[in-house]
Image (cartoon, rainbow over all chains, first blue to last red; front, side, top):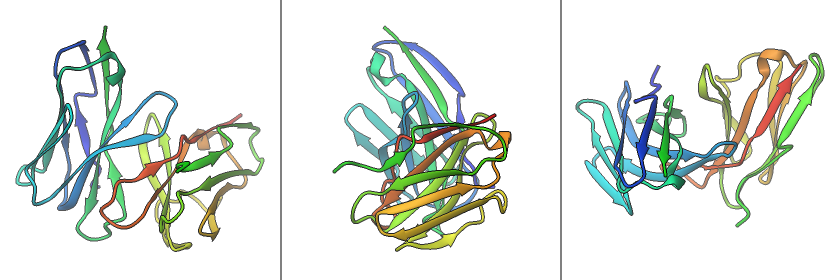
Length: 112
Length: 113
């Protein structure tokens, strides 16, 4: 399957530290998206990176994409307690672009 | 914009009962998705619609599951009869067009006893 896998499964850091999460996928993609999910809530879109892009920034978020390794990373700088959530990557294939495949998620806990 | 609205937020029912989950997508969004989230299997795409027409239902687990979209502002996911293994959080999401971020509702937490 094309399902992505996030690494690590869980991460615990102190407020102010940086958090890095990785995502690997299996087939060619059109784009890759990162989402955040707070407990008991739906997923919220963070950032989308297209297959021809290598890096993208949004506020304290930095996403990289390496299509040769079929991997992506999400960096959250200067983390805050409010960043505590689960983070998922989602890929859209080159065919069937509407079928987004979500990874298994990284549970991030930021300690105040 | 009110976002994607799902109802009910929580549903507890007994095995064998019919369950209907509801979703109102964001106005103007042409695509609607139903997902199921469990600890064991993560987030799974069940079915998606384009302009109210089901395009891909290959993720629907069994014939007990059915989904409809009678108009652009309303969709239902029905389970009949329900079984304990159907217990999960069911999400609805919508997008305006391809390569756009998905907008998720807050989900329906379903417990089948």
